[in-house]
Image 1 (tube, chains in turn red, yellow):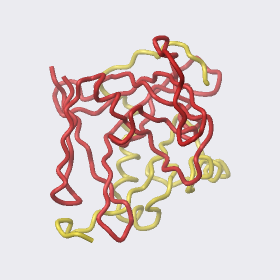
Image 2 (tube, one colour; image 1 turned 135 degrees about the horizontal axis):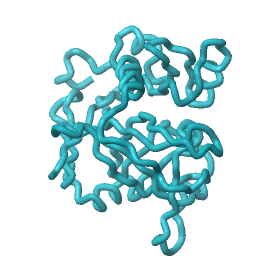
Image 3 (cartoon, chains in turn orange, red; image 1 turned 90 degrees about the vertical axis):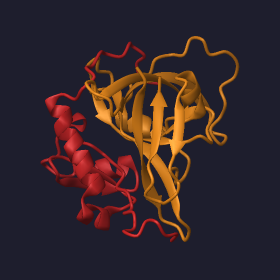
Image 4 (tube, chains in turn green, brown; image 1 turned 180 degrees about the vertical axis):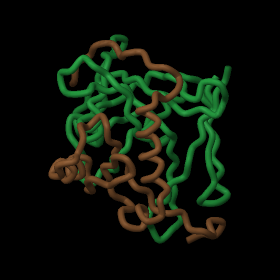
Length: 155
Length: 93
């Protein structure tokens, strides 16, 4: 069954009307470094169609202590993140969906993992187009006003 | 990279503890006073109380840890406080 995730607008302070779109996201994390125990943590993710691959900034990876699985099928070089060397890995996330009876749907996310932070980098996980393609998602944004929402429909 | 063991299984709904954290997260996103004071910053929240604030996760967490009542990391949430959307959001700013 297809599910719908609502994308909420978030204003960016600027002389022009700038908005980016977030969705409620939960992530599988280690309770502590080296711990086998896992839990879920909420950190909303930013829909970022300008990125080919999803990106988990180093600061976010440290904060969440995400459970990262290797991407064994990855062939070829790993792209850099604005010149910062990266690895690739796969993490587990849950998106809030509007359909009953199960309000959260699990996905895995292939992501670039930069090894260091960029200066003044916004501290968000970015969902890139690879995620949308992998899950054959349909994305729509209501940009008729800064308060307009978006929808991510995933079969 | 952290340990690469398989991810555990979780239910398609929030547990009681996760619901409490979700309420803290939503509170920080939508409370007008929090927005007014901390928009654009990362806050460490526990039971609708701001324990630390910073421009980065590390700074916010370091500030929270200076308090004696700061619980372990898995019990707090660390949202980025959004800037309020103007009431007349149909008009360009």
